[in-house]
Length: 114
Image (tube, rainbow, N blue to C red; front, side, top):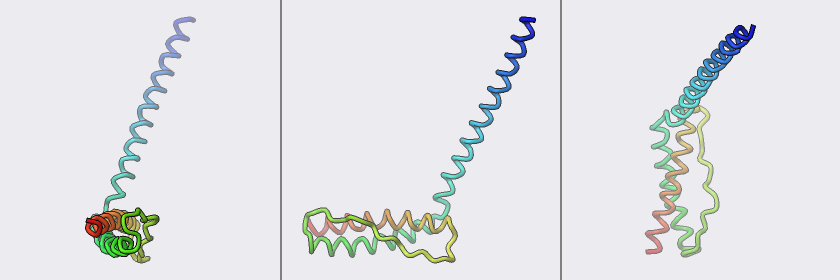
């Protein structure tokens, strides 16, 4: 009787261990798929970066003349997104715009204050 309980418990634990392993592998692959989808549209990122860099430089020049060496960048404006763009393109464009805006603003302020 003792032997049967031990064997049954061992089999149950083995099944649960296999189930946990399968679930962890599945969750990890789903997470990796979500992360790779974010940067799918490289052209969207480049277009957003270019536009953000241009607008960031303009704002950096204005702020440099108005505020001098004080830090003033409080908020990055939201870029215009066309409704016809795909979700991946829009996400990449917005990320590129934000990165470009910060870079353009910083470069412009640095050059102005040199």
